[in-house]
Length: 183
Image (cartoon, rainbow, N blue to C red):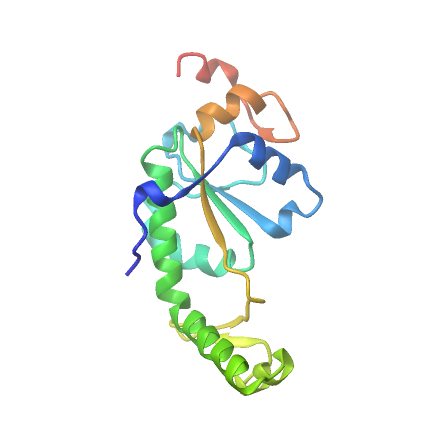
């Protein structure tokens, strides 16, 4: 069970996210998950994945598998006050449930390295298929190279994002300013 509470979720400023998205390695390092429902109309962050909050529960296992190699995953809704943070917590819980065995195996391997002075190459060979770990759901996945994924919530959500980057075509797609004037 996930032991993370809402106030301890990391908040990412819009300026930080824009810098990350404009970097040349953005597509391999970061994923942005937009959990808005009908309020998705009027624009979205370029390259974001739209997963309406109403579909999140059954899409979580797919997201965990798809985003497994990302260094950072950023969730947002319109204001990032309820749906975005809630989705981030549910994702973290599902990730722990699915990858719990793999993460526990990594702890065992790290302990064995410390106790026996093995190299990373030796350790991989003790884990079965080279570079593979078995997930709780029985699927095989590539072993992560010691980095834990960071899960963030976009501070201020899309409302704050569009105020600064709505008209920036490098960062925002399908922007309709009329929709956001009264928000």
